[in-house]
Image (cartoon, rainbow, N blue to C red; front, side):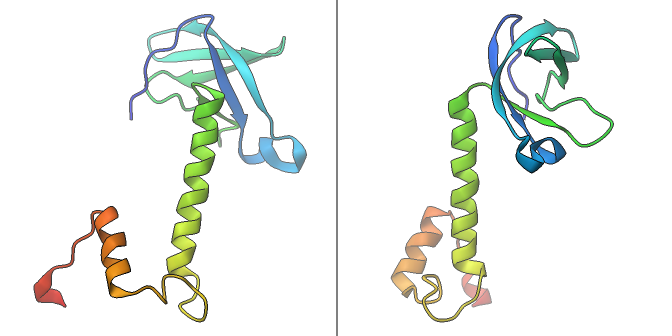
Length: 128
């Protein structure tokens, strides 16, 4: 997904990921766009750390695993965290065991049809 072009001086939201987020080193912080080119742009936080990102995707430019993820705002990051939690919770309701108190296992046919409708899932009648 192609992202919009940031502007020099704009404040964005930077989140540590991977090894940078381990052992309590993970931080979320505001950063400032310092340079914008044709393929890359740079953000800076603190007085020393400047990080290079791809302009089209906003992914960190690195030969290794990314250390940072960039968001337009703190709210976008918080929404991304909620989406991840909802996805995991919904997946776990259907995947982690089909016994006992699992809500998916005990769902009625009308409830399953409603879930399928929300998820835009249809069954092919000839394959039932």
